[in-house]
Image 1 (tube, one colour):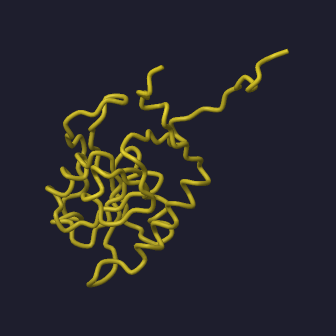
Image 2 (cartoon, rainbow, N blue to C red):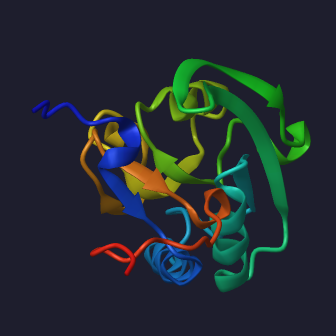
Image 3 (cartoon, rainbow, N blue to C red):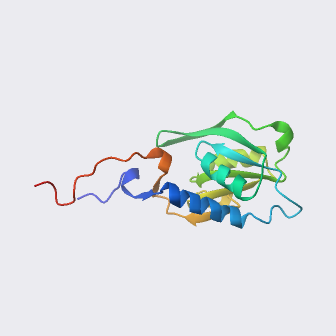
Length: 167
């Protein structure tokens, strides 16, 4: 019997309710803003960072919200990170006072690229894996590197056979 698991076999399923609670907890940790003032804006890393960024922006009453589109996965396979769409350059500058939000830091490749572009931005995620943890300034929950997180936007409700089968 093999003990090797496929990515989906060690899964951490996140419901919409759990995501909302964790994003609010992230906002509470970020409430003080940068050391020298208030947040100037929130930038969501698309696509996973959009729901958490919206919740954080609402909780912290930040009205300026933008996105950066970074592609680093082909389905469940990681690839080299590349920017597909940049946020407003006048808003961003070097990132000072900007809160960059994503759902998860995994290997850290996405945030590494974003940090190169905006070195003074504050990077926050809901979930963090050990390999990428050094790329994030604030997070809520750490999960093991071999855990695959199933976010609510990746799931659909469907019938499941009973554990003991059918009559």
